[in-house]
Image 1 (tube, rainbow, N blue to C red):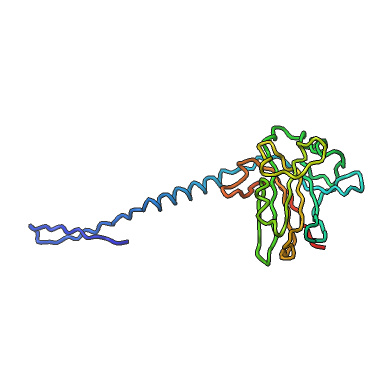
Image 2: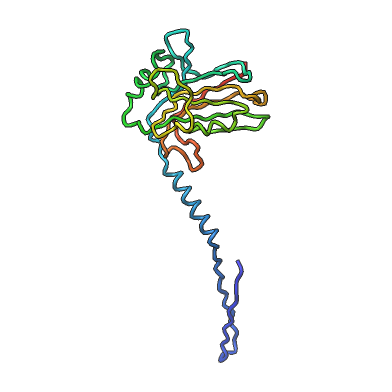
Length: 229
């Protein structure tokens, strides 16, 4: 630390006294602002508590039996413009559940919880493109478009449909009531550049369960591995 000397001349005694006084460093406005923001972020991290009670899983309806099956791992051929597979979200982790109408089955487990209508469903994709790792969080249809050349992602709100044929949910259709209860993955035109397994996670959340960058913080999540056959 730099110091300055203050010379006090005591003439009567003929003595020169050197008093060393420390110089106080003054922080710039930018430094002060940065420090405040860092402290605020630390406080937010400490304060986060996961109050989400929902346990969920990703299920596959194989169409060859009466039950949907909880998925941990799935294998399929990856061919351009061909579907890899579709997966459905339900608020349970039972190994097998009913193969009945989606809305009824979803309600069967949703009704086990109280006050969860504010929770939404999101997804996370992890894979490598030419050995470069990709992690993509998907909260609405527009989030699913970034890597379409490699992996096309389609999201569906099966819960708010009346049973007639319907297409995937678009960004224009997405609103505060949308519940993205299923997801379909289709091989894009550059699928051969995707050189790893695909990790697909589904999670339920409210705003407090996301950090400032939109990353999921909670434990209401289920992850599966999708392998290339």
